[in-house]
Length: 575
Image 1: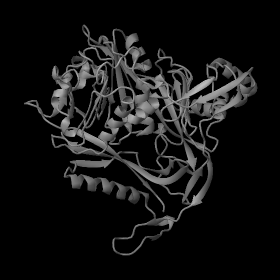
Image 2: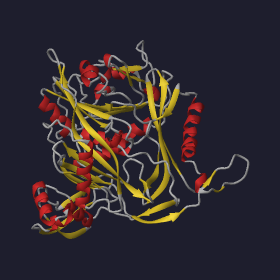
Image 3: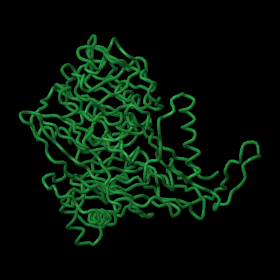
Image 4: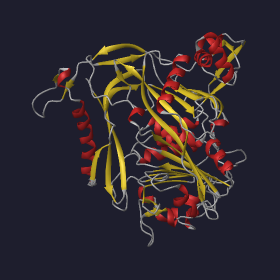
């Protein structure tokens, strides 16, 4: 594919000045001097898609690079999970395209020795410390003393069937990057912090990725992480965005990095995107996490009403083309020129640029862009209404969301840091970025599922726009649906039902009952369960080039022994 287009190299200040002169963002760019050349979108992958840092040679099976564990059935008898194998496979299958895995263990093959020094590097092949990057998916919890614990698939010797952070001692061999796709694996609030949990366990670790909160039992954490990483994001940015943007807005993903100084650890946390093998000092820890703003003004009120017209929406198809590249560069305030060539990523999209100056296009034409790094020296967070107004003004200026947007929610990128050296120091937590999300409106209702139909604007505390993402799709038209609900068993076929008789909460309840039935069949009924406050919503879910009406809610389950999990119910409304 190829096309000829105008190209301009434009800085943020030039963009603002042009906007003042012209009066509207899109026209401002076209008014500046431009040169012309051909943009080529080349299909195929390059070595850039391989996360191994330069200089690594696969000299033996696995090369001590990658390993993954997942547990769905636990030796401890804790509640079974349903999607952890899929989660870990999504992470492991990607890296296995470039380097063979050292191991991939599931359920009863996941045992305590894999997490205990010196057995965690068994035969220089198996265990947490036998690989540079390790992924674990399953249950997780943390006690009041800051000890992380994860039930496993099998007991070993007299060591029980739990992995416990206070019994671990890793990164003295190969481990440098650890992913714990579990609840409470990287706590940063409530008196907890990564130093308290992990300092005595790590000996050269570069980064760890986890959760401050309960996480959701879904299967796309691992694959979503690589999808975001392939948009030229750093590891921590990809982890946080994949978890929050694509899966659930009701969880708090987190990550930390180690280094000799605050500057080194911060640089690693925000910029590292390749798996390096060098051990680093644990003198300083720097961590970040996403957390929803607590104010009621920071989130739209959940929708509980059905539209007058029950309809599905046909969406206009968009693709990643040179014309789409031109359109985006003409709208947005990049400090880089349109590239002469963009190389296909594994998902079929395209990306160019570096961590803080980048643009990526998904196969469906949606995009994710970054313009600048935040001023992290300014620790005075933007007032909520100021941030919403600034983000809204930017969206209007660059002409996004032409089919209509509604403010959806606001979250903060928080940061903390500290050291256990000497008498120790713990810096106060602070907000470094404000993320404002708008949602697309279809048939008068919002798009309610994460990662779809959204415009997301990131601002720093100086009110500078750091980046924007757009996953909206223009609506081509609506098609009426004949709505029916099931009749009681044995009373006959389903019949059309007036809209006034449809109860969206009943629709969700039927979906939740299927999850409870699975618990019953597994003989792992939870101790308690209930809806996550504020998670009920009625609106549209975008699926390909169609948007369907759904009711959605999250439920949290208490399995006992300090173990929790969340479940998403999203059920269609209509025939």
